[in-house]
Image (cartoon, rainbow, N blue to C red):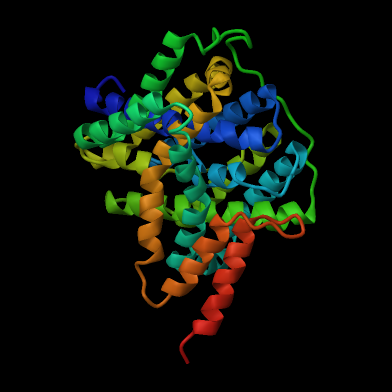
Length: 383
């Protein structure tokens, strides 16, 4: 490690800042939507960061390639928009089931091939429908605090022009600075400094299995694991797809009772650690993955003050930060909806149905969006 260039350490640090700081507000919102207590949200983030750190570091070391793990950002968005009224224990049961589905996908090659054949337009439509409400809430926050929200939007645009990867962390720092200046943030140590895990006994419910676990599994597979494999291939590696999906699924399953909704391959942050800028020698780049994992383990120790800051953040500011963080993923998802003209209408229907927030029989809109999309595929299928 001593022989590594400084760029390797800086790449890992940037990836952690972007990966954690970019969407931690979204994970907190997901926990709040599902009725988690502050202690359970702390446990949720601690379990996620532990799973990311341990799994990524070990796989990078064993496979000798930079395996960068992350939590499921689209999965967190799915949870934060659910309107089916699940309680925390039922949600934890869905997390366990989603993890087991990912394990099965990694163990049975045919399942991986079947999942890979899901039209990208349908997957993009579901993801875009999940993300759209957050971006709308960004604009709805403007009348509540126009100076701050418009200022954050302007800052985001400027930083994206100069250094896109730092846009969301810059918005976070600016938001906290303004709130601290206004006296709207507590001292972030009332809940303690060191992390404590809080296990929850899972409750397994068929409605949550269909309406939460299945969409969570699909959106994580299509929007995190598959793009993560593509990033590794683009960097010149030959990642063992089934093996990586299996270990991500196993990590998700083991950490789910503590609140983790999904540990999987990273895509955006992986690109930071797998390129030439991280290390000029591709055979040594796996060490960047180990450093990245070790940094996440350090973050895992100090989750309580971080969570307290986000829980105390005014709702409209939290919505603004989350919306700005999800604009880029929404743009990519919308591009995927309309990319393939053979599935365009089916993908658009998936998008509209998912974004509508439709909930029937306790099953959320993500599932119904998929069902509408698949039904449209059958109707529009060319003979």
